[in-house]
Length: 419
Image 1 (cartoon, rainbow, N blue to C red):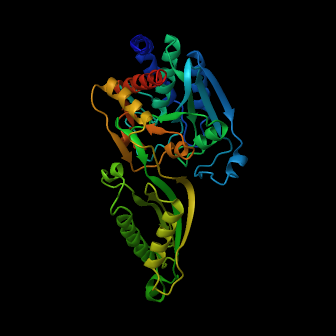
Image 2 (image 1 turned 90 degrees about the vertical axis):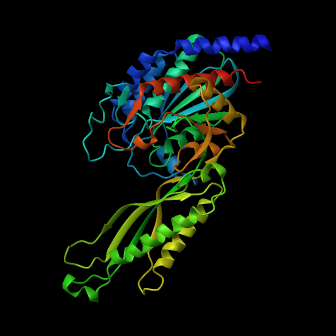
Image 3 (image 1 turned 135 degrees about the vertical axis):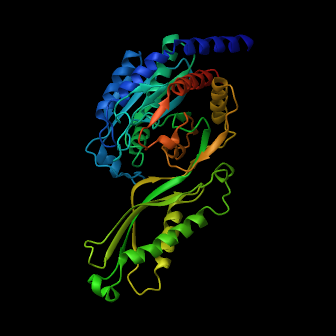
């Protein structure tokens, strides 16, 4: 046993030594220079496939059958237009039993309306930071995954078979990972390097996208009392949604979610009403996101929100609002904090960071729940900077990107010697 432990330590040390931090930064910057807004991921996936092959890994870039996926009863929803869905799997052959998945998305949100200090596709490096859309969420982390596997391969280190899934369509519902798991879900465990601030995330809230329409009666502005403003009616709905958010977050039982300031957010992110400044608006449309509690059935969460909206306007004599459930549907998920896979990831991160790493829950949806739905133990860990995701001037610290790649090496090689 002592000799096995020593061999394992030497193997891991060789893989860590094989990691080239400057090449990691160079390749991450190059990936950030390739726009890959959700729905248009082909160019970056082709780039990453070539990168993986140069590292001596087996890369498989493939197209999924969109029509077949959309016909599935558990199709996770979509919000971005697309006419193709590509996936990239990169495989590290295993020298030990077991099979692990590393999963990361290459699609990113849009760049916003405000100017960036560096261009959103700059891949600029300045003061120990890598700048650009996807620096934190999470193209740079995908490159770190590939460099970690390349280092393990170069060192000939002990590891199980590892498959890196580089997926599209995470931002609008998770169709890329859904498709990848339809194709291959024979994994003993999975890790997603989302930006968790180095917490080991093993609990994730759900998030359901909804839209609604409130109607009114049009009238000339000078005769507004003869009309009924849909916007005024929407205000009552908005107040009811705020009260519903408070109910959803009252008495949170899950210990990791209870530690969050707002475990299950409810937000209206888009609102439009009226057609003319001198007319009483007869229609108000809104779109939002509902947080779903861990352990709660999404159908029950939908029904509760619909009831809250209907009750808000039940007594005004006008037609009730119409609610539709559109776009992405992120269900809640968890892996027990004491699960051996969670503990292995914690141990690897603590060894790399030289400090304690805690299990945590997050209030945002992710592809984690697609693994959990298939009974695959899954956790997330990654750099700091979640507050910079989807924001202008997104960046990641270079030393943290290297630490992430080294942590993934420790996870992979640590898994390879587990009994």
